[in-house]
Length: 361
Image (cartoon, rainbow, N blue to C red):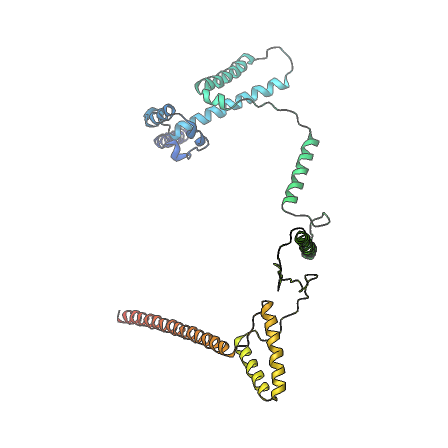
């Protein structure tokens, strides 16, 4: 009697749980299946509209109980098919065993069900064609993989100069040092080559200048024209200059002497004082010598700084510009300091007001 009442209670509880499961939608109980979500983008307008209508159809909505029963039926059917397959493999005879007709009916039913599913969903049958496996040589695959790995290693420069990868930091630094030395040697070789080419071009220019002079002389003999020309200076783009007779290049020396205005003015003043201390004859000789030297420098295009009046004017102009720049810089620094002080004062005022309001609360 007690067992019967316990069984009845269990059945009632099972029915109540089944009723609750039948009220819960399957998507809330099992979760939403997103495995075929990518197919929605490939649907046509008619398929999308049909899916919307099916979603709003109350008969098509499955509860958790329906899904559970369906899964149980599928598991039972799969177990039966597996049992049939196992018995058919173990028994190699062709005669029909007991219940063999039932098993054949079950397998035929499974095949029919799969066929019906394909007929109902032709898109699934189209999207899942049978893949034909082509036998591939493993050695060919290994060679392709090895070549791909070597290409990737060469792309990221994983190997060192000897073809092996660096095993530690010391080897990596050594490889970098060797690479830097190679780069410097290449740059040095390039500079030497460029210098040699420049020298060859310069010599070619000199030879062409000589040939042009000879041809001009010959043309003057053939067609006498007054071409009494002389060049005070012949210079090239790189700074080299020809001598006065246009026979060779000048040896460029480093320019000596003052480079700024104040030093030039000071040297001229000292030179003038020194000349004033000499006798009249010696002073005249030095002045004539300087006059010819300055004339020669002007002919060669050099800039002279021997005019004391012009030097004083230039120095005064530069000092004025320097003083103006200094004044502007001082005003700027003072303005920056003033704005910074104002910001700090404003920040302190806000901080005091905040602390005062908090203390009043």
